Length: 463
Image (tube, rainbow, N blue to C red; front, side, top):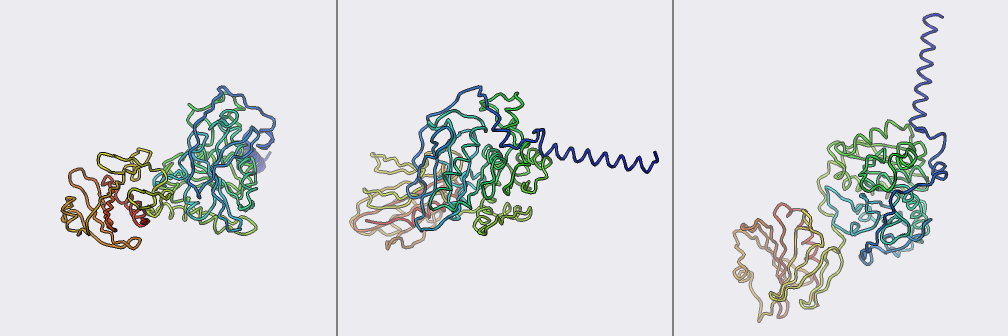
């Protein structure tokens, strides 16, 4: 055998090896079965039968409806955007939050934190309808937690429900999720081509890389693990699927997914300067615009590293708000908008109403509070007299004047030097009543909290 011929044989062998490895990486030892076929021939065995009866929070009226959609185990709860009532068909995205809650919570109407926006609110704010499904075993739903096996079927059931809604365009239903939700939607994309496009933030390539404390199956069972690990099923993905993660997040998982697939429908992005959480807010805003522009008969969503990086480099968007709901205070005779997640307490000894978040975390909207006080007056009070009565030092608290609902309102704002809280005070005078709003937040959160106060104040109406 000549040296030249031996070289040609070696090249041929190497090509066969590469092809074999490529086939292996796309099928990953699946014996030629598709994900759907493999699942149909498999029954999971749960090591624990876990479920919960956690109450379902009441959604904001006119924003979300609590609905129940039919799955193979029975009816499951979900929040769905209300019918816009315009007679049109609208795009909708099913959004699967992260964590192992398996259910639905206050997240959809909480404040969209720029550094960790689990809400998916960018889609809602862009005018895209949303559906947040719960899974089997949660909130009194039938059956038990299956740790990414039966819950993938629940996502498909949610699709069927959404597609049947008279105000939803069945050809423009998208799917997105983060972390455990990102893994779930990636598995769902391998199981069905019904979604127009799929957006998976921060998934893992192997189920074992998630928090194992919540697993209800035997991780050491090869088949159980394989059925829950996206890396084995990437070749089955037929819908455009975008896998996105910050370079400081689950980067190894994303690289493993990228190496395991040459499927042209799977697009992976590692975002420089981003982590597992802070990619959500800027990039979901970008995706929302992509969805609005995706109106043709065929999918027309394309992403590039450059535009994702530009989105990531945007400054925090202070225009985003938690979902606001009308509130009426009959004692003060005023109405105004409040974040839906805020509660009210009345302190009779001081006659003060306190409005604040039901949560207590270290961020602007949960560290701030609003106080409302009402006083009877004999006649108008000058701004200077109010400053003196309230101890608002003009050297610290800047004053300005404007009109709200036809009434003159004075605003003061400044940093209280004894506790380093940013304070913003507003007084309204009408008839024989003085209404005083006082807003306070730790100084480090003032920039992101002030838009909430401004939104509340400019919504004030009088009886």
